[in-house]
Length: 455
Image (tube, rainbow, N blue to C red; front, top):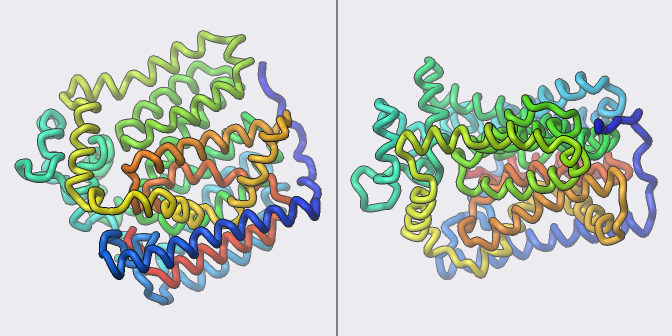
């Protein structure tokens, strides 16, 4: 059964009691971040075990302006002033194009606050990054067969940290860019920016398919002006987030507008996601939420599972036949993780301070939105808002599992970008979006102008 998408409705009415509770939720997020900063500074100054200079972020205090400052201020003002109205009025396809273009501009201008080299071109060329390993992939089949031999520190020619920390599809992305002539940090950086900006479009498509168009439109400005954009343009994780997001979006489309091609595409991207980052296997929780929300459609057309499973098998089969063992790679990565600073960083701090990182990349509006999604589920409501709440809470559950695993101690402002992208639609439940949108934009501006981020 195809879900119909009604004409966009007015947003939720403002309830003074609910509005106060929203402020309390945002205040709790601010308090969490403040405590994480103060406690983190004390631990780092006395024990030197956090290995970050501005806990809980991998950053340094460095107030500065840059070439991107005038443009990013203009984009922030324009987005707050006109974003909600445009999102409500543009034709749907026009909204998707505008969201992608706006997110791209927001990410690029934020990155250019640090300048072209520091903000974009030099990010993926440091000693721990993927571009340092391109020469070792001159013979791709041989590199894949021997990939696990270079993960653990102390092995012959160990991989740089990020290469060792991910399955080989992550590094192969940049190897293939190099092979087609897009060499160097500038091309690699812009590839991540352009691809990462498409993630917000995927989330909008999924929210419209699973909830309704009104909620998707209300979420659009928050997906564009997210504080997470500070890191989306500076790491490959923004690219990984987009791939994972489109896997979920295609799954939603495959079930609500029955399409075996969309199902196969979703399976293909879900399989690729697992070979871009070990931690993104947790996207199975979000995919399960999609299957739950579309269970009626799935019950009517169970054959859609066949192309989904077929697509899902492609990358695991290809990489396994090429000689890479995913499970062995994950086990060796765990050893490498505890050989480095991951074995020193205190779990007792990071298990809650990482949540402060999540609060920073998603912003105070998301904290208030999560309160509303929780309230919807507790009241056992039905309808579009309940479906949106299920999707958002599935992403939150995946993030919490990653947190409790102990394999995400610090640097989660980058690592958790794929999950953060799915928390932002919670902002669609907030009435009077402009003040909340302004808070999101101001936070992003402060982070980028006061701190010199490590990613």
